[in-house]
Length: 253
Ligand code: PEP
Figure 1 (tube, rainbow, N blue to C red):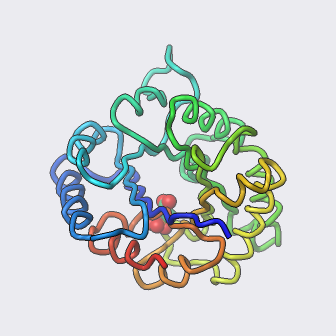
Figure 2 (cartoon, protein in one colour; figure 1 turned 180 degrees about the horizontal axis):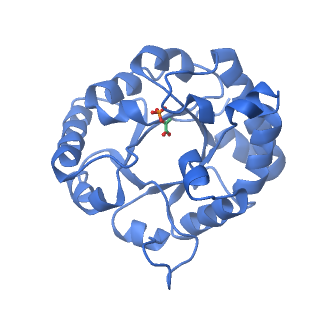
């Protein structure tokens, strides 16, 4: 069986000014320095405004840096937007694309998300492509159809495990304290891997990391991270406290 090294990714969303943001990053750097041989990769995705400063703080650390969004175009007349090349230039290794809050707040559809993921890959960033069903879709029994459609629509056709991570985040579990059962998470992740295998081939599917996101906390992380097709977590609220984020990271099998 392919070994997929877990990825513990923090999505800070629209949180953090220079004071508390840098303090959190410093606490994570210090915490990571104390972990002798981490069994996971750690990633933090602060808001754009803190990326330059945090890149400097992370310089000698094992923590990777990512952004929460990028534009699909390389450059040009897109006021207020940030390109993937700009993120790479600022020190990012990763970028989240297609988070459900972007899909909802900014009307991003699968085609937009795919274009952003292509831009990220083209700038040598690793795209963290987010997918997940709404509560109504789950209640209607459509979860597997929805995530498969999102994989087909949002993941570029030439993606490889080295430049793409998929995050399954049930929309109704984000920031709500609710999660699917462990069996439900495993069922969806297995289906996602099968769909990726059909799209990109079995070898890519076996190597690609699939993260679970949605109210992951130190108290539920161990069971979620032990699931066969869960290769880490995308963590919102609990990534804003160093202790909780490490509590999740240290739960990796
Ligand atoms: C997220 O925003 O990606 C997320 C999973 O948030 P939370 O952990 O707060 O549910």
